[in-house]
Length: 323
Image (cartoon, rainbow, N blue to C red):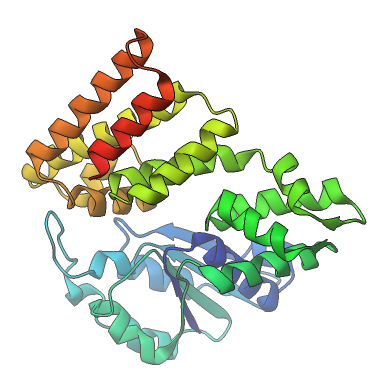
């Protein structure tokens, strides 16, 4: 059987793969019968060879491939789509694959026009995993607390989601700490304020994104919250400088026509961050980006030399570069 899990929510994808593994066989047996590939230079022959292997002292065998479908995304700037000729028979092979093998394709965000995805969808179980938002995120938070034997107030759920955002890896870690901290008590919003240590760091990233994406009101709200909670202005400036430096570097790499994998390697960032940077860079012309970066450096100097008070300088900066 073929399973396809894709989307930007890699936490849920990981849970889906682990849940499938638990259904197939016991962990010890399956651990000896699992092969995982990265798809960058993978061939069809390697996939079929792995799938055809008979399970060793187990009921099932699992073959997991990371990033195969991404190779067949429509062509764009700096992207080359993999030749379909080698992989056009994969759907037919799946139909004749040994029943003891589960082939699992794991990918990030994909377009609906992905050529290989369209070919494989009719012969596979496909699940897209988008980011959870709003009520869905709140329901997920409550379910995670309940799964750990705890209870949480609606106000605490809202505050936790506001502080930690929609990254489920961060949320899961904070929920684990909150359940241990509260013990048999219902988790309150005060507990969230006391325990959620990662939220401040996470919120710096959200503040930076809001500034870059010109969401002035949200940027101001997050900045005020961070400063009130004791975050050093220098830390905020450091993250802003880093983000705009990455955007400038990416703009140069785009102009050079560099392929996406090489750009990611040059910048040294994770795939999800690379995708976000690519979207953010499209919001700026090069002169506007250079001007914003110059303004950030000027503000940083003004704060360090005492020319401007920290809060005033940051407010003026956010207003200037977000407008």
